[in-house]
Amino acid sequence: MDKLKIKNRLAQDKAMLWLVCLLAALTAVPLFAILGEVFLRGYDQLSWSFFTEPTPTAYKAMKAIESGEPIPSGIANGIIGTMLMLTMATLFAVPLGILCGAFLAENPKSRFAQTVSYLTDLLQGTPSVIIGIVVYIWVVVPMKGYSAIAGSVALFIMMLPLIIRSTEETLKILPASLKEAGLALGCNRASVMLRVQLPAAFGGIFTGVLLAISRVIGETAPLMFTALGCSFIRFAIDKPISAVPLLIWEFFNDPNLQELIWGASLFLLLFVLTLNITAKYLAKKWNQ
Image 1 (spheres, rainbow, N blue to C red):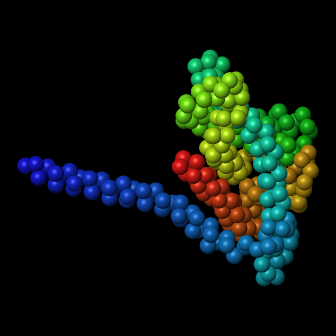
Image 2 (cartoon, rainbow, N blue to C red):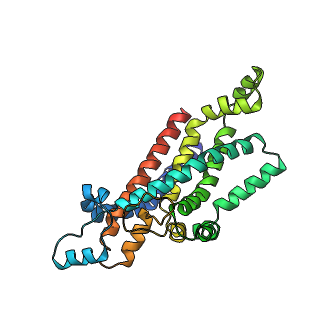
Image 3 (cartoon, helix red, strand yellow):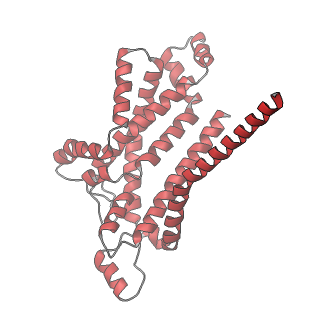
């Protein structure tokens, strides 16, 4: 009887293992289908000019199509605009997010900390289009124009709760002995946090920053209300500027440029994939 029960349990265990593997494979099918479609359609568009030249006008694309020539492709204006806005957003979101996350980790029972934690969760769940509209009212209207500054403010607001949460959770899993040792040496709480706990949590915090960047780099809706877009390379932060997600949207709305969607999408996917792989690697190395 005992042998029969053992056989039944082993059979159930094997059946559940196969079921889990099957469901995992089914979950991965859409991902690989998307990656495969984008790669097959966009890999031949990747070239040196694709990364160094601005987006062609609809007239140039139409003339190229009429003459049977390939469309002169380029997304340099979108790449520069994306990097410029991400850099400005990261410079403000990282220090503020780390300090806020450290405060929440050190004062979990404080009424103020609980309020900030609730607002962080609320901000993290806010649709990006709402953030874009709010930043339009806060920044675009007072400045009387779209700009890279407005776009970076929208990205900053979206990045902030992710960095706060990653910092808070990383600090919470640190050994209590680190803090106790610092306090025992006569350091105050601020010195222990800045010189002991934050350096020890660097790997997890940096991983959270990379994940926050990969989360916002593909956002289109908030940039439509703030950065607007630009057809040439621009470095001025107080003027309308382009971004790769905005270019994809513009390509989709122009029949003459729709073929360029795949190259821009492939670049964006590869960039996000690289950030995610880097974040996973750093998290694994930090945990070890």
